[in-house]
Length: 271
Image (cartoon, rainbow, N blue to C red; front, side, top):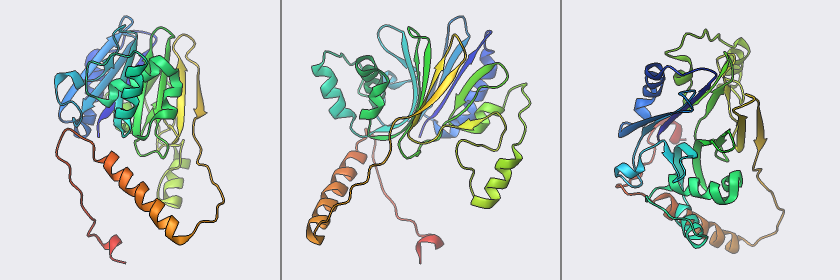
């Protein structure tokens, strides 16, 4: 778990204030921090790191490519990053780290935003393409990783948690009482609403494309679960399920730090 944040303004961003907002995410990333200010300080990207791939300084974020035109701040884990990296190397890409973060960067250079179709994992990311003057926000297929954004008050800001958006600011965010009612109806607030007016939650399996010049943005669904009716024998089903489960566990266990597992012993698991 890491913490990401980014901001695009019409005027220079207050650097100290932005870092305070980033550090509200300290609990998500106690292993390191990073920040970059671009285009006369009108663009800022920040990151709080929880390190589990490439524990060296090479893994710090925000991360950029060799051209310094593409930047990323990313929270998550790409389970098939090794396979994607091998493919990209064959296509001529050169890597300088052992991170899955760099795989997303290099993949974007080859496939554009369609790289997200190839990612198997849990993730929320902000990808900035200065050459195209575009920012992409992407959330994984099932929404495991959170991602919030606001286009109010003449700026665009995104973060892993709501408090990183609404804290340490002079803007007056108001409670959305329809979302408040939703919470007591459903016990959660459905996307794209949040408890705050003017702050939205990016839905799972969607990406947001923001145009820096025009301040316009659009949201696109990039994946939808597919169903197929098929008659299958019980023995075959058990075999296929077992192989898929084994493959999934092996992919999830990739890390440069010790891993562990636990079972819940809570009341909810006793029934």
